[in-house]
Amino acid sequence: MTHQVPTAETATSDIPGKPTSASRTTLSHIMTHNDTNLLGTVHGGVIMKLVDDAAGAVAGRHSGGPAVTASMDEMVFLEPVRVGDLVHVKAQVNWTGRTSMEVGVRVLAERWNESTPPSQVGSAYLVFAAVDADGKPRAVPPVVPETERDKRRYQEAQIRRTHRLARRRAIKELREKRAAEGIED
Ligand SMILES: CC(C)(COP(=O)(O)OP(=O)(O)OC[C@H]1O[C@@H](n2cnc3c(N)ncnc32)[C@H](O)[C@@H]1OP(=O)(O)O)[C@@H](O)C(=O)NCCC(=O)NCCS
Image 1 (cartoon, rainbow, N blue to C red):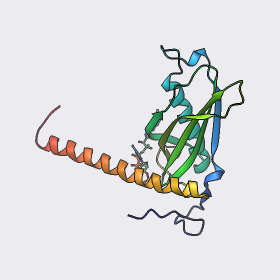
Image 2 (cartoon, rainbow, N blue to C red):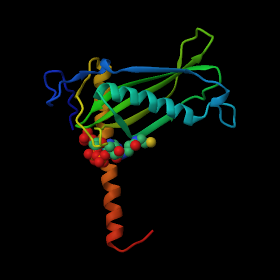
Image 3 (cartoon, rainbow, N blue to C red):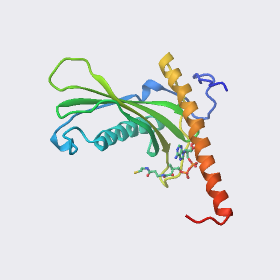
Image 4 (cartoon, protein in one colour):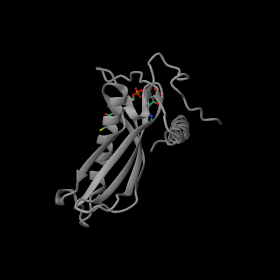
């Protein structure tokens, strides 16, 4: 299977393409005692909200209007985040379909009052659907990856998209088969 990366010339859509850099966003936040779990480190849900917020801003900017979270997957927590950490949530559109976008997010943390370099503490991939005023999916501009890193992320996002669709289809088929056999659960 080939994973073709569109350019401004080859993007096939009535809507002009938009470069990745046009919507790339960083959201930064200092963690306080309000953000902790029972162990005293930062609650994973606090990080997930920041991830969803940053990704939502990117999806809205790229699509030029409202966009809703359709799925969030591969949320990975690599290191605990602590009170006093300055957390940076970096998000960009990795891939676009007709009405959906995959947004990739990297979470970095550094001590708020030290000049040591930030380290990566997490990452996630989210799918957003652009919606109209009635909440119905609407077409998005094709993303045009710029750097080699953007192109690699586009190709990897296509692989994830293929797997998401295949998994959804396989589960749907299994449920239909069980229902057709009269199995109730
Ligand atoms: C997301 C939503 C708009 C999709 O609506 P739908 O009627 O199923 O529309 P479609 O099947 O045409 O899907 C629209 C696009 O989203 C993609 N999509 C939908 N569900 C998806 C999922 N679970 N995972 C990945 N992509 C998904 C589709 O593949 C399609 O992409 P494409 O046009 O680029 O091929 C709808 O399910 C919704 O409004 N969900 C609630 C969103 C929300 O409230 N989020 C906040 C949660 S607190």
